[in-house]
Every structure is written in C-alpha cells, then in structure tokens.
Image 1 (tube, rainbow, N blue to C red):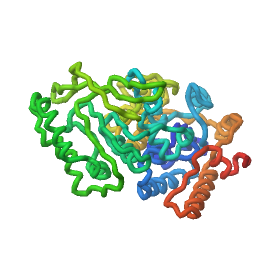
Image 2: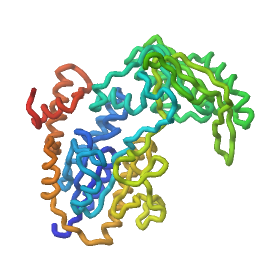
Image 3: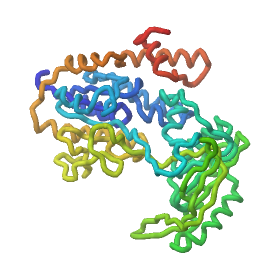
Image 4: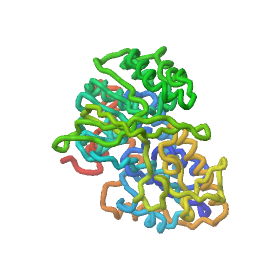
Length: 436
C-alpha cells in the first residue's frame, strides 16, 4: 500500500501489544521492538507464578495481536542510550511516528545507607526472578529466614507468598509508612496471605497505632476491614510461617556485617492530613528489625537512559497535547514520539489498565498520522538495520517454535507450565544459535 503509515512501537508488554493491535487494525504497518525474547512484558513476567489460567488467557490475546500480518516483531533488541539501537537511530529510520511502551525499567531508590548489602533487593528483580526472566532468573538471591518488605500493595503480597511458599522464609514483616487504612492491596490478593497473620497480634498493632489515627480523626475500622475482610476466602495455611504488619514505619537504613544484611532500621511516624490526603511524618524515634532480607516494593520509574527527557521518574509529557484522548496527554515532548502504559505513568494499575492505556496511546498516534502524509519508510530497510546488529533477532515464527518447545517440556515433566530460564536455551530451541 503506497499510502500506508509505518509506526515503531517499542516494548511488547500489554500496552505495546494492544497499542500495536489498535494501529494494525487501522491499516498501519507496525515494527514492534522488544528487549526480551518473548512478548508479554509484565503480563508474562510480573504476575504471580501460580496464576496459570490468567497468564494463558493473556497469552492467547497476545498471540492474536502478533498474528496480524502488518505487525513485524523484532525480539531480543534493546532500545536506549546503552542499548543495541538508540531512540534516535529508530527515529532516523523514517517511521511516521514512534510509540514508546517500554514500561518502567528503572527502580525507585530511597538512597538509604546499606542499599548495596547482600540481602537488599528491589521487588521487580525478585518478581522477574521467580517468573524466570533472564538474566534475573539466573541470579542468586539470599532470602534467609526473616524478611521485611517495604510497601503495602499487591506486589508486597505476591512477594510475601513467594518467600513463605517457595523459599522457606519463616517470618515476613510488611513495613508500612502510613496506617492500616492506606494499604493498597486488594481483598482478592490478601486472601492468599492472611492465614499467616496472627490476628491477636494484628489487633495489638491496631491498638498501638490508634492514637495516631485518632489524631487525624480516622476511623480504625476502615483499616481493620481492609485486611480482615479477606479472611472469608482465605487460602489454607500450608507452611509454618508468620506474617506481620509494622504500621507507621519508614525505613531509614540497612545495617550489615561483612557486606551482609543483618538489620533494618525504621523510624516511627505520625499521620497528618491536608486537603483530605493522609501523609506520614517522622518522629525521630527509631527501632530495628532483625532481618536477613529487605525487599523494596515501592513502585517503579522510567529508565532515565532511554533517550527521552524525564521528570519525577516519568517521561516528560506535552502539557498542551494536540491529540489528547480522554483528556490525557500521550505525547512526549519530542515531536512524533508518544508514550503509553507504564512509560506514560509508572506503576499505574494492572494489565487491564495497561491495555486501555496502550490502546488510547495508539488512538492519539492515529490522530497525529491523519494530519501528515506517509513517509514511505521501507520495511526492508528497517529489517536490514536490525539484521546488521549481528545478533540473533527473534521473529513471530521463532516465538511459535519456542512456545511449542516449552509446552512439550511441560508435558514431559508433568508441569502446568515450563519456561527456559536463559536466553541461550531459548535461542537454541528456536534454532537461532547452535547448541553448545
């Protein structure tokens, strides 16, 4: 088609895949670049490892998107200042627009003493590890018997489950900056963990923080229900382990011996309220927890080395967008470059949210394209550029071969799911490198 637009989509998680599908369904040709070998992003590598039905349902939708004839898939290609291709090199290929949906690959750091001790990790690294994303799948982690997780969202619950069920951790403490009413996990997630919570101890913890709640006239029942309501559908307790909450506590540093973590230091907080928003404020009083592991589950930020301007851990957006969708700006501050999913707003929502955001970002791109003539970029020139990288590039057909091989392995081993844990194994199975 002479008048066909050609758009680069960077990142093949839910936002990128559904964004690419939206563009392809509107007659646009799409070059979909992905850092990982497999498509799926956090839907493949961020969902709790036992949720097989949910993952398979999503994979089915992703396969349907990739099967569209006007989507070219280039897996195993990293884009960024330190990547195999820079964003400028992608733009120089002459695409009509670029949609960045590469997620939030950076991790939030509080800059605390002891962050480099062995036993201190970021949630994303641990989630990638148990979901077998290379190279995290091959890293060694020190989980020990006692762990503290900083945060109170669904990721905290997932990691606590993993530590208790798969790593033999005997005691997990969720360190929560604010009070019980501000926890972010859902009842549906907490039901998997609540049988490990000592309810008498939890009531004592609620009594301890009661003066801070009363100081801002917050009803303690709100927080109690956020946790206790999941009891009705609680999973049975299958390990001899305990889960605790340490409310109104902010980490101030990690203490170790010989480079290995031994304690977490936290500061006690009080609550303040302003314009209906509850905040935590340090009191200067500190206490320590004896721990082998500290995992920060405090959200993510975009990769500052990607090649787009950033502010506050996000890619800068055009505050006066020409092509808004639902009153949201999907335009970066760089002409013709759009952002969607977690690349637009990090750590925001679940797969359904990323799907909608990626689709809306593609709608913004469509508006932009209507106002310009196609640049007639050659798909062959794009393929040649990628081929010149002198490394195995993964195509849609390769992915099908990999999925078939993993399904066969799962059947052989009588497992619900099997994943090759290294890029080398995946590339060998697809026939892209020779078996060692």
